[in-house]
Amino acid sequence: SYGKIIITERFLPVEEKTVKPIDIGGRAGGVKYMVAGVLFKFAIDDQNLFHGSDAAAHKVAGHELRGLMSYFNSTPKGLCFPLMALLDYKGF
Image 1 (cartoon, rainbow, N blue to C red):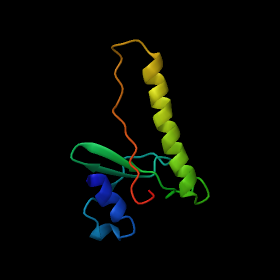
Image 2: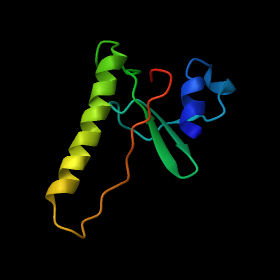
Image 3: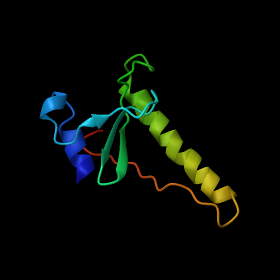
């Protein structure tokens, strides 16, 4: 439900958003939000790293998930990794 709120309010000014973006550093992850102890990274090209292409930012997020799955599947048991999921809602 928090992901839906973040996506639905994408075009609102920051002061009108229910969940406000945070600055935790990094440029390639898109806009970051912290709510209920969960870090949400909205994969959009807000820093113009991909010449304004949100589609390229979406691909990077997908590669990040595939990379994490690759590590998970090729390491010995007992090694811990963060939980990660991709949300797709209203085309975002």
